[in-house]
Length: 132
Figure (cartoon, rainbow, N blue to C red):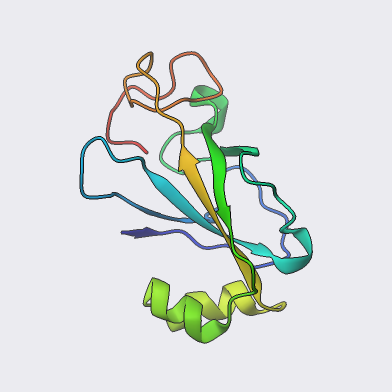
């Protein structure tokens, strides 16, 4: 598991850490991103397109990783629930500093046209399968 963090309510710029990614068991299983979004900003319908900046793939060169909202939590997450999921009390504190956020699951879009195997906002994306 890779944990990426950003404080709730701050402006996020290119290169900022904001999400947790975890590979799933099977090679054909999708890669999912868990995002914590402020509750008052979490009105994202399932299926909404999302572009994510990836720290190891500079946006100016490779673009953004593409995905779609798969699920939006119905209730705001407490610091204790986020700590249980992430295993990091300090990080959970950052996500809940301005109030309990809502969990949003984004399913990353696969692509046979890129070396990474995932869809990017540029034609090629990064030159490696291991970047996402």
